[in-house]
Image (cartoon, rainbow, N blue to C red; front, side, top):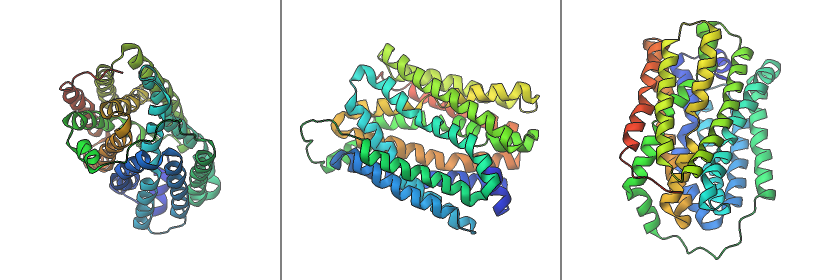
Length: 361
């Protein structure tokens, strides 16, 4: 959302914008699995509140730096701390809901991401216009701090027998299970579509079609609202089918087609292009709840935090690379080529997930 403002403030090339957008994925690579293991050991509430509070402080600090690389470092650290949400909240939902409800429940939990994206898309243009990047980052940091307080007060862990202490074999199992690797890598390739259509939508519409930041942000907000619908729907369909892999593969195939159509319409009128990008982007965000659910169900309750941490770590590794790669390709060639190549990610994921036997909810 702040890509145009960051580029203007720090005088960035498109490739450097890609580095800025990928920075928040760097920290979680180191912290997601430890957060998951810690949630398995001490519970979700402390992990959520601690990680979010530290993330909030770091995000506020990011708004005050005048050095681009220090900004990247602060955002990477903030991403690492905020990654506590990814493992701990998914583990909590796993324990609160029965197997036949988890797809819907985790789909609902995953709507936090597009809801947050919609709030940012609606609020940040006005905040940035009034107070610049300092005000924008202060707003985002404040949201993290408020969320930390809510987690500390409101999250309650279900009453259940004390889980056994984690053994080294829990980590070993997580890292050696081939099914988990296939699931995480296959679904992670869907990020090529998701990031190209969401992280770069505002910049693309602003640069290639001359839309104002506010108008482009409105399109992103609509996309995020659509993603709320697709994530909940994917979870509900998955529960009804009592299957995870099949609906995951459907999303990959459809997502790849949507990015490919966007590439074909790169130079089309905005009235044609924007609805296609909004729909394709909403579909490209539908998959994450199913991937989380499948990872947790592969692991079982005792190891669910570690499995979700591993799943999210895989996404973080791929998510770190995609913005930089996409920006470099666009800068070297064109937006059309960038979107066309991005469509290959979910199609490759669709093929890879075909090697995985069905995971029943």
